[in-house]
Image (cartoon, helix red, strand yellow):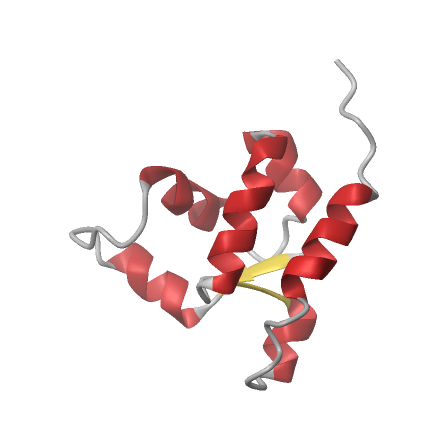
Length: 95
């Protein structure tokens, strides 16, 4: 599943004085470029970022490609569930 920054994320990243995002959340948003999958981000930052990605999606900073097309008020409702389903299909990282 590919993730994309929303306009809200772009605005938050461009305002360096804003304290709305933690450094960790900013790092996730910076690395989210619409070409990297959740698996790619987890390989770079670790499996524990799933909760952060879910929080950023719920807050409107990240969206999936299908959610960007939907733009409906209820479009974010199933994103967390789809994120958890995608995470459950992941193979354990090899050492």
